[in-house]
Amino acid sequence: MPLTEPIEGVNMSTQDSDEEGDDSPDLTEMAEDIRSRISDDVDVDVDEVEAKLDSFINGFQVPEAEAERSTINKLAKERDMTSDELLGGGDGDSDGDADFVNIEDIDDDEEWVSVEAKFVDDWTDDNDSDSIAQVGLLDDGTDRIKFVSWAKSELPLLAEGESYRLTNVTTDYYEPKDRYSINLNSQTEVEMLDEDIEESDQDSEVELTGAFVSMQSGSGLIIRDVETGRPVQNDSDAEETEYDLRIKGVLDDGEQAHQILFNREMTEAVTDIRMEEAKEMAREALDRGVVAEEMAPDLIGNFYKVTGRKVGDYVLVDEFEEDTELPDVDSLLVKARSM
Amino acid sequence: MSAENRSREPAKRVFAGEIREADEIYKESDDEYAPSYLLLPSGGKANRLLIGGTLTEVEDIGSGDDEYWRARITDTTGTFLVFAGQYQPEAAAKLRELNDDPEGVPSFVTVVGKPNEFDPDDGDTIITIRPESISVVDGDTRNKWLAETAQDTLDRLEPMEGELVERAANHYGSVKEDLTQTTIEALETLQDETDE
Image 1 (spheres, helix red, strand yellow):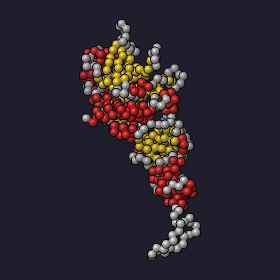
Image 2 (image 1 turned 180 degrees about the vertical axis):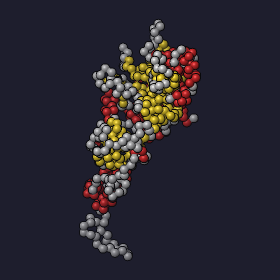
Image 3 (image 1 turned 30 degrees about the vertical axis):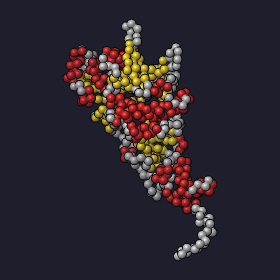
Image 4 (image 1 turned 45 degrees about the vertical axis):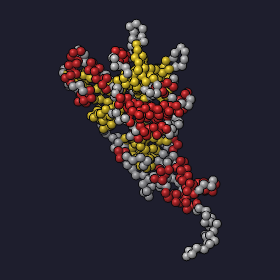
């Protein structure tokens, strides 16, 4: 309805004949405003935004502010994103793509990033969710990170062993396990690279937590062939042998059973049994095996946090501590009560 | 799949209250050596379990010289039954030791083991534990186990879809609410204890 009362000092020129009228919102303007708030990375045009606004406001009599919110929400959902991701994504660059980062530098939740990495480990077979097309591990030479490719996004499947440029992915932080992963979504571009990306140092430090669930054979007081350094049996015909202490065990976090290895120094520290005492035990019992038997109950059943270098199948422990840290019980209760 | 390719199955943290509802053990392939899994009512599978609680009873129910140990372990949500015989020598030795020790019962323990189906003549299948190791632990470790189990149970309960989620729903019906409640109660006991 056009204004009929003149307002002092204000020039009330007549409305543009194109406009719908003072009280009706200008959908195009609103749509343009919304579009400008949405990340450049996102594939959406003003017409689409306007159509949705129109549907909410004119089709369903939804108030403007609510309609704006609902439109953003709907646009986000259709693209497998949260509203925050839709609005906050990208880096504002005119080229529209999220910045390329090193995996080792990923330390923020819900960020748009791009990476160039090799697909080193495929875990898709172990995953039974229908909404996940692929899940596994990427390595860009600086570090490794888990990734999830959502089925709805219908992205090309990555081939294990190949290197890719992945543009516009989002980071995700999973508090219970204190780790990051990246999500490949409908905005992601997947490009296979000709070059082979070199994986990060296998000997890099890892930190593991879990319950010590098993002590494996080859633990306790062992004998090594001095020349080769390899453990040997009692009846070995090696020229010269020496004693050593070590523990080969399994640290299990409920998702994976990690093999860990304590060398002599670490074994003495974690069991409080020194080499001399161990040799004495073995002498008295006429059996090296008693040492492992004595050590096992002190370790099995306890929770540990260890750091070490991954060498082959084992993590060589260079630091450990008993882990009795509890997760935040209060927030678990909040979560459980809301389920 | 060769033995080398098969990596060790992780020990799933599961409450006694959930084990009580479980009764389905299955294999993913016909291969004789393929691992068998317990279908978890919360929506998951377990070949190996990490359970914990208070050892409330240890008894040799074997006949004659053959020892067959039965242990009852309660974790506030229910009771686990653990059986160790000649094929579980280390666990049997531990139970014998705890039986002989006047301080053995009650004590906090954790058990790593495999789920086992027991079909009594009269009545439903129950799942018992065949132990690989039994450890006496302190209060802090028992609390840690409880908290991890609550967290993992909630993580299994959360997703609405997925092959195992659907399979569990089809087989066990709607037990999610009950299990969520079980988890809440377990967390509340933990909260009471750690608030002191």
